[in-house]
Amino acid sequence: MGRLIVAGAVLAALVALVLLLNSAFPTVLADDQNRVQVFVTVGWLVLLIGGVTMRFRSQPGTALRALAAWVLIALVLIWIYAYRFEAAAIGNRMLAVILPSHGIVTEPDQQASVSGGSQGTGGEVRFALNQFGHYQIDARVNGVYITFLVDTGATDIVLSPDDAQRIGLSESLLNFSERVMTANGVAYTAPVTLNNLTIGPITLNRMPAKVNHSQMPFSLLGMRFLNQLHGWRVEGQTLILEQ
Image 1 (spheres, rainbow, N blue to C red):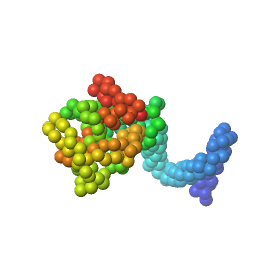
Image 2 (image 1 turned 180 degrees about the vertical axis):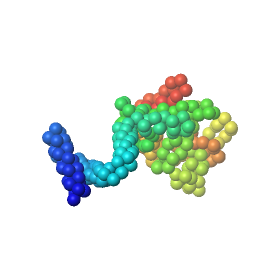
Image 3 (image 1 turned 120 degrees about the horizontal axis):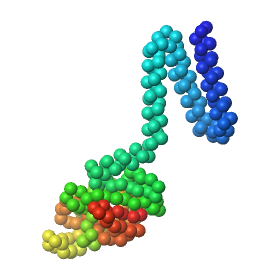
Image 4 (image 1 turned 90 degrees about the horizontal axis):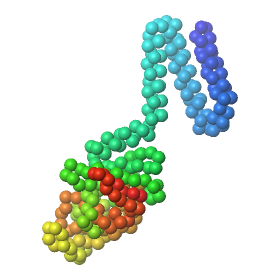
């Protein structure tokens, strides 16, 4: 009988709390999603407070320690949720230090991870020099991740044979008809068109490129790519690509 009285008192207190919040913020429960979230939260509170109350009657010390632990867990979860965007920005800055090719996306009012997107966001992508003094960029080409080196001395986007194979450009179907001079001598390339090339919020569609016939350690992003951007610049040791 005593347990029923305690449970009833707890439930009545929570109902009163919901009614009080509803009177203070009348529009909150008007939304179906908010209403479901409130009732789920109330349900969990009923179970938590009821369990703690029952244990408090028999083992007060254990009950207080359990209540303190649950309150601490709740506060930590609330803190994580409240600062989730800042935490994501910090995490991506740390990742960019470890993996310079990952880059950091900066929006007008916040920072986010490089996760792909479409044109028109107004964002920037920043890349630090890698340990060899080059700007290395992870991009998605036709949906496949490829690591490029930025080469301002190159005219075109140039894919290595292995990277071309990864995005579905079979060497047997390519026509290596173009003869070009490189620092290593004469090379032959095959013209291709990339359906899309995405770096963070930047997406370029139907980009002309070339596939090199000889092996290359990395594919290259030349001036044809950079000139398609709204802008690009180097500040200190950071390459900034503007959407």
